[in-house]
Image (tube, rainbow over all chains, first blue to last red; front, top):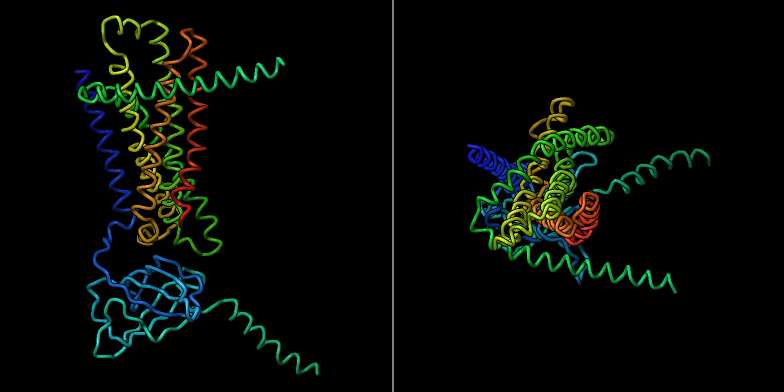
Length: 157
Length: 259
């Protein structure tokens, strides 16, 4: 009887431990949204700001893929962002444009895609021609300060 | 001259002990392989090592998660980034606090008990008596405990992380009203199954290995006196805690350095 209750307790312990592992895998990590087949498209940007790998790629606020790779083009010195788009979104027009947006004022940055109207669809390895760089808060602030300063200076003169 | 001699003696003793512990590890692993077919022995040890450690792990996990929720919220709300609370709590727990805290508790709760048990068995000649009866203590006593330590430690660490995440949710959602969908989705977006969860499990497996090894060796090599056993127990807790913290730094640098 004593032995039996020990076995029951050990069984409960192992079930609890495995349940915790499963919870970590399914509920806590991103395994729930299983990453199935994807295809890679590239976009060249002048400035990607704080974009990181694994950042979401969105159309109209819906996640359609992830940023898979960030590199520098060796010839033009522009940033190349490789995006892994879910295979089920294989009907993006070829003249789709990409811009780097920020979630909230200081939130994480992501790539927003605006579908165009072309009859041809994007395929793996294609390059997006129309891109818009990240908006940099520093340059915005300096522009704002500069435009504020102008009138004061003219009054002093 | 005397100083140099004592330094040399210390170094020789240190190396000898290191060698003994590795020889012991080899014999313990062989014993573990032979103990595997008799799984009822392992189950008995799982009860002593795992089930009895369950309560302290769950309670500490809950409170650590709640504290992380509190502190995380107080800091994040300054940047109106409280939506990242789930991510902060989960990453802290899964990557670091889960394995390390569980290992420290495991060393204090189970490691010390292992050392005291083995040391006392040796002091009261139970191990010698087994050898007289042609029962290999490595297969009968050490092996099952080794396997049980290896199985119990990752499960305990995962439990601590999971309960901690729930504790953080309790505070974040219950007290501060962070939206529950945001809490979980920020977590799922930022925590990677392989990079974070699996690496945490590997960490806890390594910690379980080290702690069980240290605890069993200290017990086995303890002088067969009451003082010797008490010293060995202390050494187990100190040495395995240091090994866990130092090893954690190395493992973290190896696992997450490439990011």
